[in-house]
Length: 145
Ligand code: IDP
Ligand code: MG
Image (cartoon, rainbow, N blue to C red; front, side, top):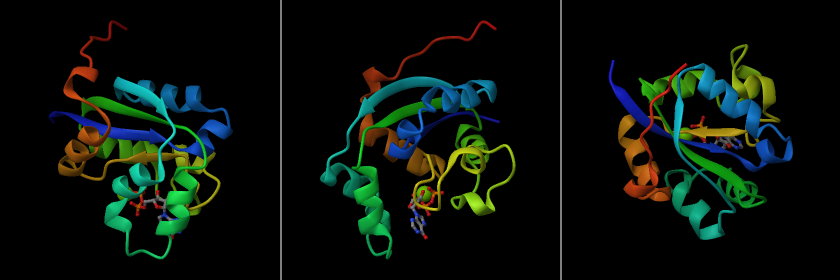
């Protein structure tokens, strides 16, 4: 398996619930190492651009409103098979369908306010990481644990 990077976002509901630490702890426990991180309040334009692929979906307008309703934490996670691993840790989009012990099962409110975003492919991970971070904002450090 290859070392990959993926984009993760803790969505506004995650910040409102006060679980930034709990989410980060899951990632660290599952060997997903944060290598870039920033708290940011997305503008309408930034949220629309990020979710442009969903522009035609009926939930797009509400999704953009939700994602701009408060600050988010954007981060890059690095690790073996990080893209798929992060999707596993997150669980299904709809928390009602998410597996036990996943972030969305444990913390999400509903299919929209589902606490975390994670890239869905290595190609999209590259695009999404570049959407938020310059190369110089991504750090390299080793875990000694
Ligand atoms: P994902 O986040 O699991 O990759 P996507 O299908 O890419 O799911 O959808 C992006 C985001 O749009 C979801 O995380 C969720 O916040 C929102 N969303 C997806 N499907 C629905 C829906 O049916 N109703 C409302 N919001 C939705
Ligand atoms: Mg998606």
